[in-house]
Length: 111
Image 1 (cartoon, one colour):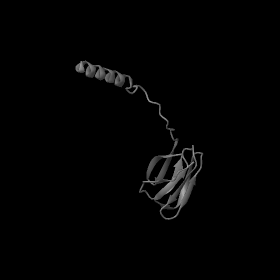
Image 2 (cartoon, rainbow, N blue to C red):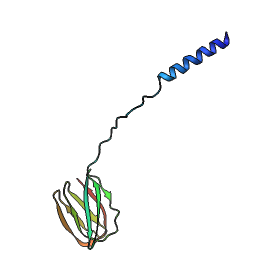
Image 3 (tube, rainbow, N blue to C red):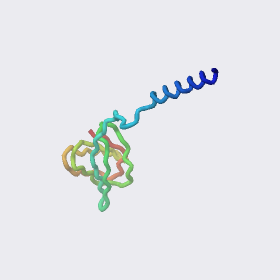
Image 4 (cartoon, rainbow, N blue to C red):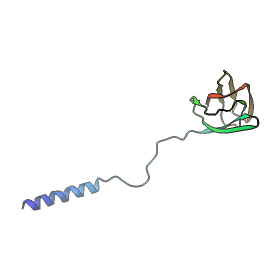
């Protein structure tokens, strides 16, 4: 009789675990995607293009080129700060802006 009670309890426990198993299938994502803008740092004859977030948050620029121009194809306004104190803003339209004097860019922000 005791064996039957243990077996019945075990079977009940296994059945309840099977019905409480997590649901499989796709999981909804609650993340917003952040748009990006393409920015090209130009140091003749070399140029590097990066995609920065358009979220009004300051970010580090990890490029060692001493750039003399910054270009964008548009989509956002961005400001960049150089290691020697320059401030360069590229507008939301396609444009190329001179950096004076040429220098490595250390950080930026796009909105």
